[in-house]
Image (cartoon, helix red, strand yellow):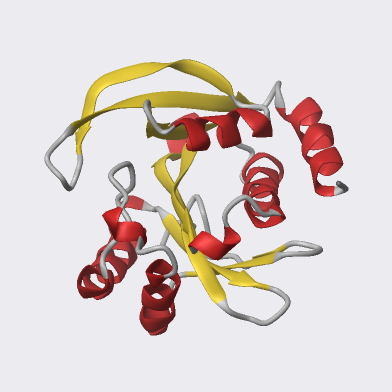
Length: 198
């Protein structure tokens, strides 16, 4: 059997977060995290509702086997509570690139240092263990908070994918596509270290 491009791995930051590979037993904790802010009602996200969460977890675990994605739960280090989810997706082993996406956090964790630490962990692993040449981020073109957060990491705008997705509410999403390349990574790494020391 071939070694997968992204073997399951747990990533732990120094202050806020532990990223653990998603498992079915995380479903109830994810439902509780999504209830903080009723995230499934936000027009610019695709967070599953409580009724949809179990199906989403099963689908992601299936995609791990068939598409090579690696979904994580985000566990808060101080009390062990699961407060969100993220994943490596759109994995292209032949081109050594992937996307970090499907990210959401309970409302109480938003605008905290947790997101920066999670992204730093994922980027470090992608560039320094998986030897990626590029890591991509995509978000709704109108989601200015998400776009600012991505830009704050040091990612650069590659362009806009017009009519990229149909959202749960039936609207059509244009996606802003950003990336960090392996050439960018040394400077971005120093930048992220500085952000985490604030």
